[in-house]
Each structure stands twice: as structure tokens, then as C-alpha cells.
Image (cartoon, rainbow, N blue to C red; front, side, top):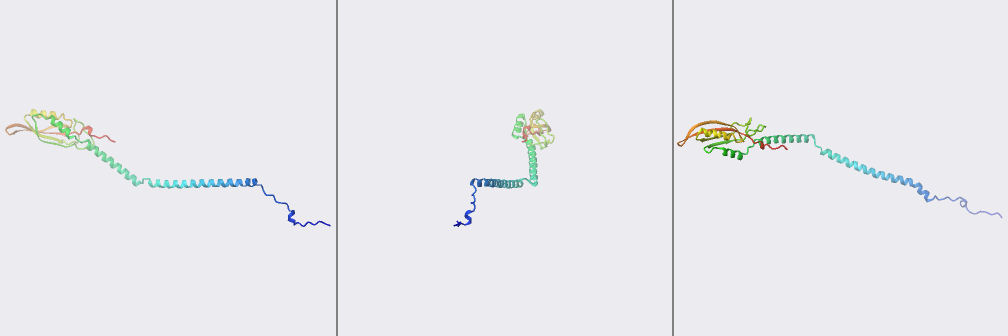
Length: 208
């Protein structure tokens, strides 16, 4: 009797071998590494793009804040006006007279037998140059200081002129006129003296 195989043909086919897990991991490792590199590059690239956008916004803001030509011209005009005003103020202060000091000095040098009937004084005219005590200013008014009064003799008038010449704020002391007169029944000498007022050197402010 002959033996018959009743099993289906598939039972005799060779079985397929399942790949080992280590081989699968080894094959996927380069893919995972590449994915990680790509993700890292994408993240850093996005950070760079954001920084560039921020930089562009800052540069645009700076460009808007830069002064325009109109603002530069206005700043130049303001600076020029300030310099002109400082120059004018310096000229005024250079000719400022400390009247309390000057009039006090004049009062102290008047001889005892001299009395005044009028006194006129004015600051020297600003000229951009400063006169020094004892010298007449080239542009100061020749009648910046005038006095009129009486005394009893011509010697007293001469003494008055000598003493006024010693006052630092006066220069060019000149006897304008004299005349004989009487006050009541007393004979007197009427005089008119003029001089120039000098601005003291310390009146000039230091430039800053």
C-alpha cells in the first residue's frame, strides 16, 4: 500500500525569518539622527529669523529718530541765537557799574568846602571792549559823569579835580566851566565838572 501525503503544499514552504530588533534600530538610527538635525536647524533658523526681524524693526525706529535736515538747521539757528545773546549779555555786563561803590568813592573824595547841586551819571556805551580803571574808554560818552556845585575858591575846585581823578570808576576828569557867583551875600565859585565812567574789569563774566 502506498503512503499518501494529505497536508497542503503550504506546509512544506520554508518559514520566513523575522529580522532582529537590533538590525531594525540600527537601520532607523541614521533617519532619527537626520530628523533631529533637521529639527535643530529649523529651530535655530527660526530664532535667527526672529532676531533679524527684531533688528530690522530697531533699525527702522532709529532711522525715524535720526534728525532731519530741518531739525539740524533749527538746532544750528538756536545755537547761533544763543551765542549772539551771550555776546550781548557779556557786553552789557562788561559795562555794568557798581553804583553804590562808585558813588560812595566820589562822596568820600569831595573836599569839605564843596557842595553839589546836581550829579548825572550813566553807564559807558557797550563797545565790545572793556575799559580799565584810570583810562578813558574810546566809545564812552564824554559826559557820562557830570557834577555841578559850589565852593569858596579856585583852589578848592583844583583839589576836587585832583581827588576825582583818583576814583577808579572815573577817567578823563575835566573842568567844563567855572564862574563867580554869590549865595546870599557870600561870594562862591560855581563849577561844572565832567568825566567818563569806566566799567570795572571784574564785571566781565567768565565764558562757559
